[in-house]
Length: 528
Image 1 (cartoon, rainbow, N blue to C red):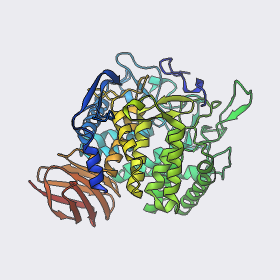
Image 2: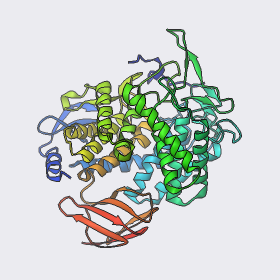
Image 3: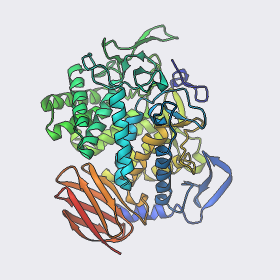
Image 4: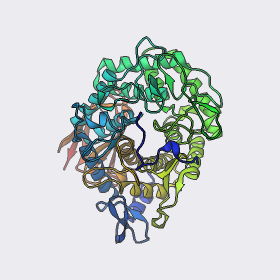
């Protein structure tokens, strides 16, 4: 079985280890009188700083210009990526991109879920039909080439890895081997399939999302301090939880615990809202999982594992599991009346546990990936920043805002001019540099629209799912899945004049338009 190459030490081998005026003013102050530190480089670029010596994005004259440029280049790199010898797009079979020869490793465990998550936001942002087409390609391929046998104990769930890389099929787990799958990744896929059904109307996406949810309901357990409601690695047919013997303690370690259940919560929320499937069972299971999260990781801060390439025997706490739940809590105030307080505690823990001072001289503390791989990540640093900004938006507490902006700036340096996005001191990972990267910048723009480009029009947030959207010179048109929804747009090209299908609130100073739609189809007319 293939393992991680020595260019990145195997994770398993490492030690454990709108307050608008205020915000616009602070952001504008980042770019005037830029001074260059020509002798220093981060990632692909020479470091740029403001007059105080704090890092700013490497590209352009504003954060919006910089991040829009990076997002477009990343998307172009992804969609134009070469195909493998069997004719399948490279990103459907490999977790690491390299020029020339193919990397020997297969798919990243959450790679396609991450891409679907980011591309959903990207479609609303760009209005490019190719984004939606790529989403369908990824979902269709995984469903057609990677599901466990329908009649198995964990039947109908996706395998996360292609053990024979160019076979064209997913058939197991990178570490546990053939027949094993990861229920947390299956739950995330179900949540993204539900979103894709709402976007496209394609019934097979909804049917598979229901199938995944039903299987999770059937196999759920209450869990405890050592066992999550579903295991991390389990054999699809036999139901055996994967085990390994720890080299140091010689104890058998079971892959019975993970805290990556935000996807499951989203899946059950979405199906319950639609009234599809076993709604009462979904609600009961969602409550069981929520109660377990509150009783254990929220209190113990035991936030692992997540990554497919970490062995079962080497437990590792992760930033992604913790901060992803914090984001969900802030977006779903009904989850707990103490939601902001819980999210703040999670953010404090991730900051304390994963802070890395290697770029501190530029005024930024970056964020490590996990305790078994103590290296700062572009995806992890930008995710933490996006959750910090959401917390600031929801609570009005701006104490972490400047640190978050600098984290976003630092993470931008790993994007090359052509859209390659390199993991620090490592390879071009198709998880960290693409699906698990773009969404953090788009979410940050939604929290603080001054981070979006000033002279373009973009949908930044919707309470629904956007089925169609187009940006014309004299109008913006979109269609949402829900008959009533709320949207947030940055309108930098033109002035909103009228709206069909709802009402609008226009803030000309911030160029922010808030829409309250009472129909699925909305047309916003723009004046020059």
